[in-house]
Length: 370
Ligand code: FES
Ligand SMILES: [Fe+2]
Image (cartoon, rainbow, N blue to C red):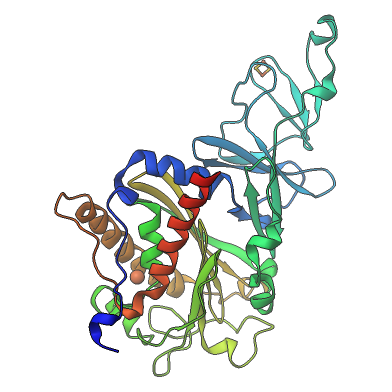
């Protein structure tokens, strides 16, 4: 086959990164109609613990009820619609009360108190529960879905639960969370995560630890892409010097101890499973050119309990790498916004990126058909 016969795939047109209307539609179809990762079950260990998430302008309360079940609700009072809860996280004292006229809801969303409404003729409390958002948990990771009739979370996750069972994510605990504001479209952050071609140029520290051409990528799936990378030389994990200062996660076999799995689980969860810890990014798009990124490092509690437990080697390493990635993503955003930008050619080593672009286009076509 001649070189010309191989068709070149190209990056997406400018509007996918700059047009507020495309952004609005993507928020609807990716962030409101599918499952997104909201956080971790251990953020809300007790009944009444909660945190808020903002999705496409909606404020969502994620909480745990008296029976221990995790649920999610729109942060909207059923009386006159007031946003009830303003603190980004905390603990409800057994109930959720609106600060306006005191309507009160159980942790399961039932309306349990509505002052003076008994005087209002046919009023029935059962008819005014909080508006529920679908919630589910995969191995310690909480997912929510704003669709009226969401498909099962299991369908979206496909093979992932089985693939990553050995890391026992639900046993891990948060040690550090950093929040970054990135002036780039959410898709650029996913694209950047999905390739290491940039590693020799952009990440000299990272490039000492891993072979940038050594990714073992699996066939892209409709709801995620990813693969594994091994280590260079005597590096044993991704840390500032490649040294591993924690035991391997219990449950990993020989093969799993010598690689990092990097998976972009659409639309907002970047999961990086290391031999001795888990790093998780969640993306929270704010505008077509602005994404908040929450990055968390989770470790095994037995390691965290050790007096000589160390984590800065992993945190400092990835914080440096994150900043390098966000910086280049912002420069990508700026360049793509130029009148000079035209879709550019992907190399054969950027297939995961093309696969993600295809998902973006396929969902757009699907939305237009319905
Ligand atoms: S708006 Fe919430 S109690 Fe009135
Ligand atoms: Fe990078």
